[in-house]
Length: 136
Image (cartoon, rainbow, N blue to C red; front, side, top):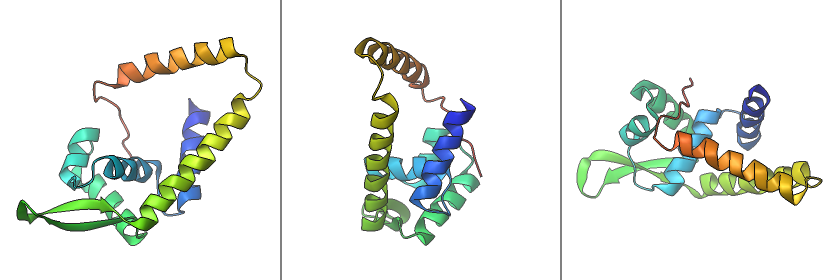
């Protein structure tokens, strides 16, 4: 698990040197839930609002997200992915897919099936929303 976490940090650093794995997770969430608020991110990932604020600010500085007024309530700011953010996520997904293919290329079909089953089981446990992605 430690090696897995190191690889996640490395992937975030390759995407952008200022970004942490938490930033990458939040950026992915913004892509999937365009129009979410920073408070939504904090609630979804059980993070402190100040942590999310710092991470979103870093994503803004990197040009990957932008804030805009919520059309339903002009007092509220919603987040959206920029073209820079979309490109960074796409490039990261491509490199991640390539890396997985390389690492798993000599695994048998039976091994892959077993591994996929274990991953499903692991992810189902985390589906309750109790995933902890705390970070600075």
